[in-house]
Image (cartoon, rainbow, N blue to C red):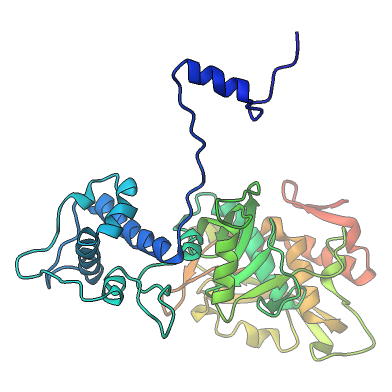
Length: 411
């Protein structure tokens, strides 16, 4: 038995057989339109969308929306012109061309082709009659929306530590930011961080690539924002939003990357000082005197860990009015003096080391805005002292903090 012919191999014998059976064959060709016809069709598509959304034809009248009145004028002009009717009838699935929409006293006469084009949303721009007015071009109709509808992120607590870590890295200089428009990094991929419209944004997931009809290759993203919302949007939409925001930035991770989570903390001790180095620094440990039931129950293990180049007593002086001190008086329970230290790098290292023991609480500041203190940890004071010793002798990277036993463990 011979091989089956491919469907595309249609011979004269096949054609003759179909003719004997009384079946006429017709080869369909792709419909092409002139620029003028494309724009008239685009104007009619706007009217169709209005009809399907509102369940009625667009109407005239001062009480109507400006776009509805425009669509009503367009539809009047279309049904009055035989050429437009011939072009659009095959596309009229809703029967919009069967009757006029003009109300009494709003009849229109066609004075010229330019007037007709103007009513259809196609008007002469200087000498170009193919320039559209009020009607989006095909490219604009196919373009993705700037930003998909944002919604609350149900699992934001899973991402909160990542946002806090990135903020800490930016504050300490471990991560930097650069303007998106001038960045040499043009890719957008899973795991990338941005600042757009004043919010930090994480590309938490990326779907498969696809190519829409009359469009460019794209993919669906899941983007998490630092205000606890998320958006299911296209990659091209995110890129458009970043380009539209003059202040948008890309958050740049430490370079080069390393598997050692403590290697990025920077030089803690150095004989060469920069603008953030000091001949002396102080690690200070504070304890809250709040009457809050949780604080009272955990007072012996709840500590604020900070590093300052000034007087620690001064740092806690206004604790009662400061949300970062839990809006309560605080007392110093330990200080550790260190020389030739990069304070920000050391503080970042300590906070990363105890990250799993960080207190997660939100307090309102005097303006009513939510503040999340990031320097409070549920860690016994002797363990903090041991960690400071490990930092001094350089062995800290060999250990991790075990929250279950509240002790240091060999990594």
